[in-house]
Image 1 (cartoon, one colour):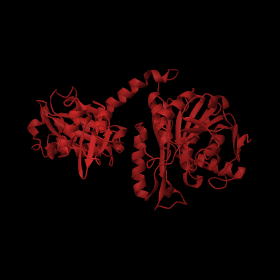
Image 2: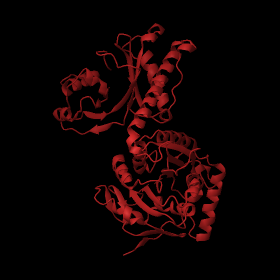
Image 3: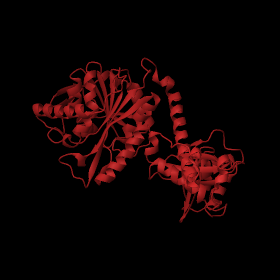
Image 4: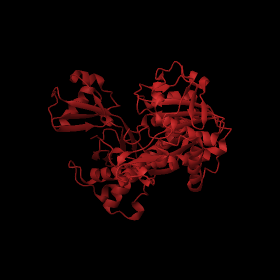
Length: 485
């Protein structure tokens, strides 16, 4: 039985000669020290999480070093590294923990924290297997950087992540969270094989989503989306503050090709000022609520500004643009308008996220105000009593049902928005519609009518999907009985 995992990608992803490897890593770290952003003024504690890429050093070494170089000042204080990355070769259901006692690199042996690994016993999402680790580069390429900045004074908790939910990954991280002695490293590249300019655009949007602590990243945005989503969920719970350190792609490297590039980002997540010595989980709900409130204000302001400018209102009546990191990330939204009496005045939206959230909200606000064919275009005289609501849609999930009875049983009143599709007909009702149609039967009948189908219609090839929303509105509730799309 092997007691250590030998290096598998030395000589391909990074040099296999120890002296050359030291020189290469030192060069990347030196470049980072000259170009990285300064740490926060109150950096009395080390970062809790860093996100780093895992390509060959010739392509991503300078980006990875942006996150690793600042760790050198915490040598001796960071004594445990929890390292998570995606599997590329061996499929895993859950998170794979190794059974060996150490991982080797040309720079020496890195001991595993066996006691910390033992705390994961009993978690159903953790499997114990060395096979996923044997040839996996996503974790291995991080080790020489860690050895360079932290020396020999740290132990490793490596986990190769396959299929798992954000909650399952976050549960594992909570077991290992510790204090300032524990650093969490998430290994992930960003977009893959897009043209240079398109990759830059996509990766900027993804970085915005990470900075907004979104927990529904997809594989096409970040190959390490699964471990990253779990880390972002944990970051939300602990009130961590994210920082973008750098964003590049393989086309920026001397050996890069601009036609099909891979994106790389370096990010750091720090403990919020004033939280030292405080149980972060105790105030995480308040922090989440405060962030949601800030996002809501930004969304409504964005919608209102678009409508006010289109109406030609004076500058005094045009609200300032909304500001929140999530506005730069892809998002799907609906904008709903009510008049001063609470009657529906327009509602338009998108079911899929394909453009920046701010752009989506602006476009839907204008369409709801001036292009909803059920209503006359909005007039400036209606502006003083206009009520604006913005709903953010989570990605839809397909409902697999055998018949309508099963569909009605699966619906969650007050929670689910539903999409119905049948032979080119398509319609959706937002979750807010349950306020007027409180039973699944009434809700489904209205949905079919909206799709121009009879209320008693059903066919074997009907396709249903459901989604949830987060809704934000002007101060005060939507007037009762005001109507919904």
